[in-house]
Image 1: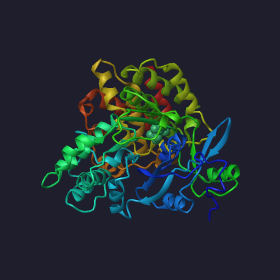
Image 2: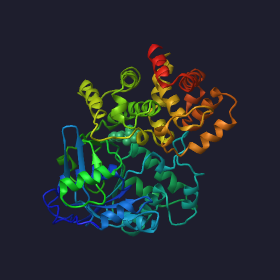
Image 3: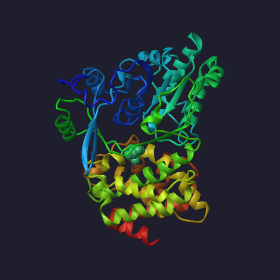
Image 4: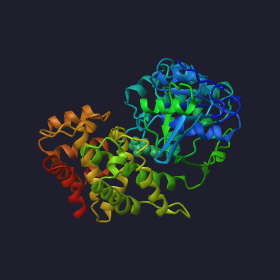
Length: 483
Ligand code: CS2
């Protein structure tokens, strides 16, 4: 039972009035969206409302619907905690239970933006070509004419419907951690439309009436714990069934290309820029890439949380090395960007022990996250004749966390990591004749880029796997530091 409603939390509400209507349909009602885009939309204060669409689980949607669409954002830092209630959702539905309602909502004339945070594996992309995986069972089913269940299928079918019914323009705003996320989404949607049996008349309509701006999103938002629920109660004075913990830092940079208007997100601090790609690479490599290394080394060294791992001397050194020597040289900074301040803020953010971000959470889904973080910079350095030791170490530590290696126990934090490729990688391990054989096939399947053809890189990764399983993760990090 919850007693959270607009009256009981009026002091913490970021929006004085309920949203005027639903202008935004958001796919992926996870903690990240609720502490990021929803907060910016509340701070914009111009009446835009969001219909939240949860992918599968009804827990968050049910909690929000029983609380007038409300929930709290609990900002946690070593300096203290604060709480606010965005109050911009007009309702929440679950896609798995009612896929047709999702298409209806995106197709509705009043909907002006459809945005997504469905994580990297929500896009059904072929890892080697980055095109729509036409053999993905979900895409095959959606193309056959059934009610679409994949995100790309739902967006594409809803756009077709818009073209036929009313022709009102719309923006598709990808807020996932993917390079050129808007451009990629546009390509996937068009590929879906081209894949329909008789071709789709909507293709040319989409080209003229739908915008797909690129965006870079950033805020560390862990999963909710019982301690968060208790802290939210302390600060709110009423029970919230679904509070979201978050760090104080938040950043959103996007292209200002919207087909049918947008909230004044700049009032919440969002930046509109024509340099989004530079911001994306900066964030994907310096933050996300280094984060992965901290998570895998940390889990293997027995640390439950990122701040605990980052405070461990050898992990901090490895994090600095991968960030400064291997990721930084592969990016072009946005104009007038203070990179030293940015790096200092990253280390401070990773030290937030009030947040308790778990190594298991950051380490999960490596098979879909690492392809966005590792192959491009690794190839760039290899082409310059430089062996990216710490990128190889990241791959090796990930494999040691998620692949069963005979006689090696990666520990509880690694065992708890969820990865869609676990089963596939386990089967590869069972078939492989040697560690190098396994590494080569794993890199080939997961990265599916030219990186898989680099014998030197695969050999280096398998050397690190051997050291980790034989002498431990600290020995491997020592070796990377010496190389
Ligand atoms: C993290 C991200 O889980 C991960 O892989 O690196 O979720 C990270 O916390 C966010 O991208 C921060 O914006």
